[in-house]
Image (cartoon, rainbow, N blue to C red; front, side):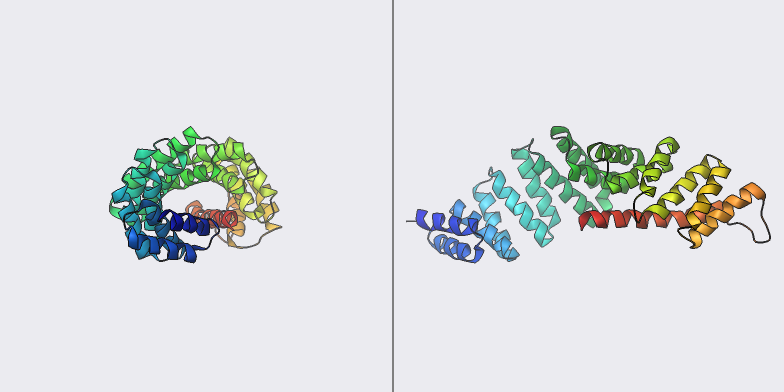
Amino acid sequence: MIDDPVRQAQAFYGAGNFGRCLELAEQGLQARPDDPALLRLAGRCNLELDRLDQAMGQLRKLVQLSPDDAEAWHDLGEAAIEQGALPEAVEAFRQVVRLQPDDTTNLVDLGHALYDLGHADEAIKLGHVDEAIELLTRAVTLEPGQLGTLRSLVEMHLRLDRLQEARELSRQILHLRPDDVLAQTDNADLSLALGHLGDAVPAYGALRHLPGHEVYAYHGLIQCAIQQQRWRRALDLAVDTTRLDRFDVTTQLLAYVVAQLFGEEERPAPAWDELEASLTPERAEHRRLCVDALIS
């Protein structure tokens, strides 16, 4: 009877013995090649065992036999992601969302697949990212407080240079997790970029007390003071920073502030455009380190 190998295979799958599960499923498929339960088990086991071509073939057949099976479409989408077949993954996850439109996990999976496809296909990336943002926004509306989804939305808005939207999302993350260093960094940098200096100053002030972030935060505070034309405050901050760091950006900031207060001496101070050109990659590198720390 085919029920016996199905039950046995399911038991091995649940125990994590994918090789034995696959063996039983494939034996069963020799007698019943269109059995959905066996195709599902075989496809999942092949995926777990990195036999992607076999997994894709079995899961494609499964969705043909069971086109309204959301779970089958989801398995196919995951296998397509693993194989790097992003267009097929997107279409599979679209079917999942069609069948389960209010499931936040499905919305997020489709959104991430579209975003990844946007990286791969530069010609139409903006449309993909816009749709991904719409899907993830729906997900956090249906289920507020999803930190991972909020972080993804920040990245997507930053990619489209939508700084105000990214800033608002970073502040939502801070509301949920006040000690989140990446969100604090985004809030500080985006507030500065958008001219919200009243928010940027306390954000950099909080970062200044975190080990490993002091110099970066001081540079942000100096830039805020310069934009406010609070030159004495900028000087005090620049002098404080030299106690921690004497590399080029810090010394150039100090020279620039001194020149504004007292005039240039024999050695001309750097132009502000040059300083900004040094601060921009520093901010990008600092953010990258924050992202890496979050992942590790």
